[in-house]
Image 1 (cartoon, rainbow, N blue to C red):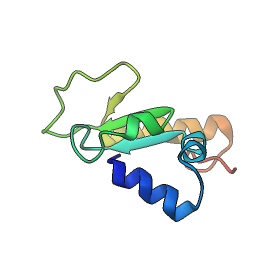
Image 2: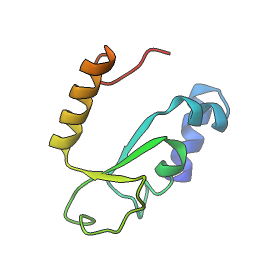
Image 3: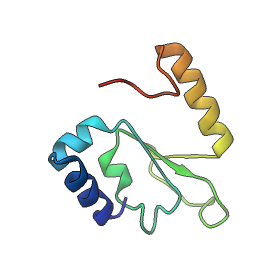
Image 4: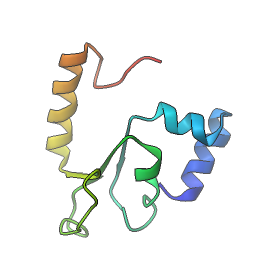
Amino acid sequence: MGRNKVVGLVDALGISEEVVKARIDCAFGNDPLGSDREFPEIAARPYVIENQKHRHLNLPDRIKLLTWAEIETLFTSESRNTGTQNGFRDS
């Protein structure tokens, strides 16, 4: 996430950046070198959505490069295993 996206979340939710980080489990971005460059720092599980522009990037191990189909499979499977709807937890 670009810095302005983090600030926007903090302002919109009325909570601190630390609390935002604690509540976000996953983040998805399709522009890891641009407007989504901060998302790995705000989410425990950051994902980059594969596209032609960056499908050959060498990403750090904790950032996973996935297609939309892989994301759907991952979260459908995860929601079945955790009893959550669409991979989302209630807070």
